Length: 345
Image (tube, rainbow, N blue to C red):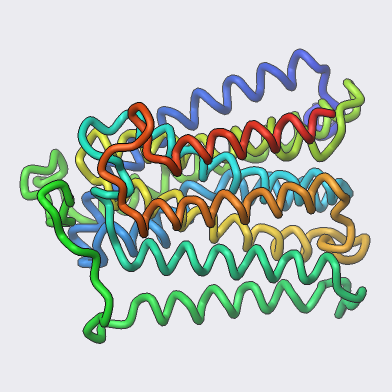
């Protein structure tokens, strides 16, 4: 039975796994949003910082497992494609949440210097990953030095963003800006904080199990259908990887936690870049970055473009855009569609 679980699955099983894991992710994502919004208030971290760190970690757990399992099984391109494909798909989640938000453009309402800084961090992390891919081959005990640089860069930036010094830049408040204030009417008002943390961790574990199942299904799809690893990793795994952030962003918007919605996406994306370091550690065939093919590098460049577009939207803060989306929402959809079309060729 164990060999059947760990071996190649039939294509039908693989497709069913993607569907079931996606459905479980939707349910878990909605619950994580409610729990995360409450914990953001009780810890005093606020929606932006809590969403980018703890919330981003919880929603990224499935992607972490997918990348680690694929890399350990000797599928570096699948692992790399999942990590970066999740970033592209998750950034697209901002456009989806923007369409759901009833009011002004979401990026206008969720103005936050912390969200902007996390966006800048994401650009830097993706740039480091590209430098490792194009740079000289260099590993220490099978691990590329860029993996340590990614982790150090993230921790250093996190310390900078958490700084409590008086900020020298603030977003101009308007009548449409939604301020992050504690919600005293929370449904969890009567529950102890320890109990909420326990449930938060329990839901996150379910997401982890789903991530392992998706990784196994993706490997079987590549072997059973002949589809390119870059396409399966970037689109199939990437979309499932992005579901937690997409669902939680929509749920957060509907709860009025607009800052949390943006923070969950951008923070989750930063942690997804760190997935490359985890995959590099798990991959025993050399450097994961050097194993990335043209499809994976093209995808990384696309994720950079999408992040820059999102940052532009946060800076411009357009009240009304094209249709129900800001200009950045339309551009995000166009760029992502271009990426998928190019990978499918």
